[in-house]
Image (cartoon, rainbow, N blue to C red; front, side, top):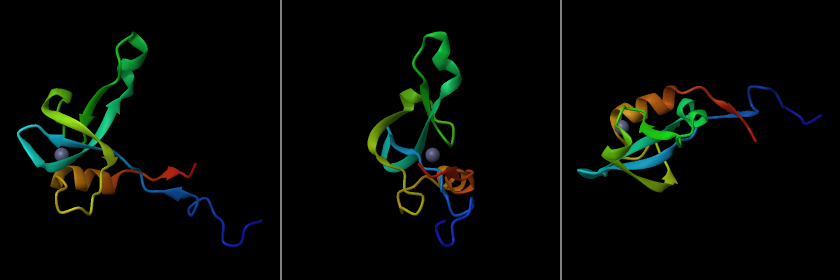
Length: 88
Ligand SMILES: [Zn+2]
C-alpha cells in the first residue's frame, strides 16, 4: 500500500488540446472532440470549450494551459471547472 494514496490523489485535472483562433492566433482555446458523432461514420468534430466550431480555429499540437496569458477567458474558466480524471 502506497503511503498517502487515495482516490482523490489518484486523479489529475482534465487536460485539453490547444487551438488557435484563425482570425486571432494569439488567443489559445481549449479544444475538445465531440465523440457522439464518431459512431455514425464521421470523424469526431473538434470544438472549443467556448463553442468555436472546427473551421474557426487551427488545432495546434500542445496542451491548453489555463494559466497562460494567451488563454481565452471562457476556455480558461471551463477548463478549470472541468471534473478531474483518473490518472493513467
Ligand atoms: Zn475559447
